[in-house]
Amino acid sequence: MTYDFDLFVIGAGSGGVRAARFAAGYGARVAVAESRYLGGTCVNVGCVPKKLLVYGAHFAEDFEQAQSFGWSMGKANFDWTTLITNKNREIERLNGIYRNLLVNSGVTLLEGHAKILDEHSVELGGNRFSAKHILIATGGWPQIPEVPGHEHAIGSNEVFFLPQLPKRVLVIGGGYIAVEFASIFNGLGAQTSLLYRGELFLRGFDSAVRKHLQEELTKRGVDLQFNSDIARIDKQADGSLHATLKDGRRIETDCIFYATGRRPMLDNLGLENTHVALDDRGFIKVDEQYQTSTPSILAVGDVIGRVQLTPVALAEGMAVARRLFKPDEYREVDYRMIPTAVFSLPNIGTVGLSEEQAKEEGYSVSVYESRFRPMKLTLTDSQERTLMKLVVDAKTDRVIGCHMVGPEAGEIVQGLAVAIKAGATKQIFDDTIGVHPTAAEEFVTMRTPVAS
Ligand code: FAD
Image 1 (cartoon, rainbow, N blue to C red):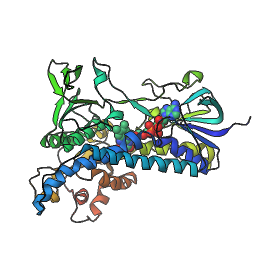
Image 2 (cartoon, rainbow, N blue to C red):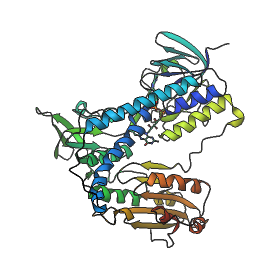
Image 3 (cartoon, rainbow, N blue to C red):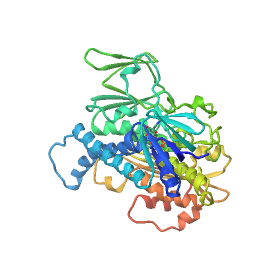
Image 4 (cartoon, rainbow, N blue to C red):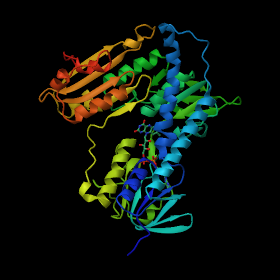
């Protein structure tokens, strides 16, 4: 049987583009279908525009702190429209780069919604295409709880295109996206509250990190309300919103942004025409090699709901391309020790196990912790403090967790992740000479374990 393509990829996001380009590079005939935007969530409504907004928000404190270094300036003004226009221009540039990357690597780009017709066929724009393998890389979609009045709230797809900066914002959620946007809105000057139904945000992160960030956000004026949830939303005649909480309290605001999780994007994908099974959370079920219950159909990225991060989708996409078209170079994706950052202000950087996870997994741990005022702030009134923490397996001396809250935490932890993945012991950290004067040197100078 001859097919139109060796691989038909649905979704030109992080995972899909990586799989398509590598497969084409290995000589396969590849098509990729995209219904919305090249580059997917990360480029258009995720990592990239979010980081640009975080940079924008950080200037508020830069201007303030500059005065302690002798700079004087007039009153700083912020213009939301300029930031969003420039951000949109950059995203368009990246969309163009993605288009060139695909086309130049020989991939056939099909713009439109793809629907699977059977285990080897896909329909797009009234045309039927056949393929030996189909890869589902359709990503996720924001999930907004259906409380009465939820249509007045926005999700992460809309937040990047707000016509103006709201004066007051209510961010709902306890995950990293909620925390990041609370920092963005607060930094840009909106009166910001974050509501989360749990005890403390960022479940799964080290508890010292969670508490430290709680203190830092509070110092910066973010109103944190835990154990709180919205029961209903009412729009007022003047356009403002009233959020009635489950405990009866009412909050007036101008914008309610739900960052309460993402569901897999399976809309009108045609899974009913296949034997592709879902797991109990509704994500596509795959084996270790990303094969679904229909052998010719594979899936990677957010749609399989493993670790919903761009570098993980990239690694999975690459693994699929190799497995299908360059098996001698195939390597399984290693899900251990994945470093991540939260681009809150201040940032979080983390790799490996939290102290709590390490103990749950049966490790006997030594914990090293340092809290200090960053040198750059010593001339200023800022009371921001940095936290650094190492979790060490007391039996083997291996560093199994590394956590930081402070400026450039993501940049610092990326480097340390290599050492930790390579199995570095605390002794190796101690034997490493610091770079002075930096904040990062603190990671190689912590000598005395703290009582955990
Ligand atoms: P996506 O990138 O979502 O791509 C899926 C693509 O498939 C989309 O372009 C979609 O239009 C297309 N599609 C869907 N259905 C069809 C169809 N039937 N036919 C044709 N096309 C279809 N990750 C990080 O690592 N770091 C971060 O800082 C970070 N920040 C984030 C911030 C936000 C606000 C959000 C929402 C996410 C963030 N992420 C971050 C997560 C990251 O964006 C995702 O993990 C990543 O994009 C997943 O890649 P993917 O290939 O699985 O799916």
